[in-house]
Length: 449
Image (cartoon, rainbow, N blue to C red; front, side, top):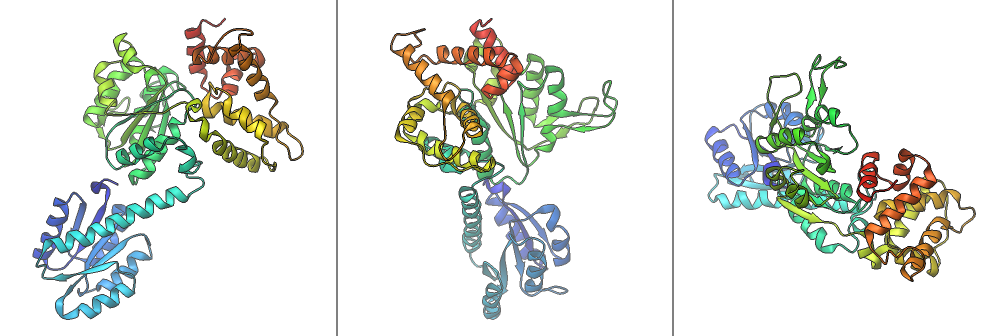
């Protein structure tokens, strides 16, 4: 968690000491609010949402212990540090028994004493936050972190490092590699208090994407019967994830660049400039540098987005870890459908691990879900995968069309099969686990009729 996201309220009725503590902590990078009245501290708890409250133990109206009890009844996660005079250290120890994290003495002879104690609280809360996330089987529908990053330990280390900053992140990876899950992981490990808000730039029609991002005022255009809050506004204090950002139109790229540079934007039909501190994470399955060279994507926007690039490997490069990913997906999907299956045989595990998975984890999930639905008894049958696996092996052995492991050939074949089987582009896109706009782009790219 960035230090500016760690919020502290300091309460002391002695103004000079209050200013001293506030200045020391602000210099350390924390967000600090100093108040001299404990009743004011209680009033601002909900709006300010502090992580830590540092309070004098002896104050008129409300003492430190009663203040702690009042605040913890509203927000049990707030930590407390008590300020006490040397003569009343025993009272401070009693306060710790009542739930305070630690205490500091007054007058403060060494500012380092304050820095160390607050740093311990900061570290404790960061660790607790990550542990809650790591132990959670589903955080906003997410699998455990060990499954998301199976076979990608270096990438997990990068994700942890960048999550603690406010840097803009660009995720590169083929369709279905889990870019959204990694964007959510960055958000949850960042400690941001706002929401995770996502926009699929390829799934929303071009003429609606701008209003989806920035919102609009009543009467801004025909059909705008009331004000709409945009995703950038909703994501304040949180993270906004722009998937398939390469599909953004040139006109919208210019407006997005302004929002990225200045952290300001206007709703459609409004002259009022709004600000946002939302963290930006973008993703694409395209060659962005190539699009820049072809003048299809703004170079200045590309460099603004590409501050911290993360390359997500395809599933075929994580073969050793496919069994554990498979077992988790089967467990979750089976439970969703109220079914239970015996462990997969060695032959089925080998087939699952050896298949090239051109649609990556999304394709894997779709095939397993269809298999779970049609399977009876305790054995999970994989007829669709068996057929694809055998056809791929024939191609690689020289029978049929030779695709030899070329991903583009495999992807083209998978799309052609889906189109034939589904009958419509919309149903084919759903079967492949991609947006209709992405499918249309792929049809054009591969020259599929």
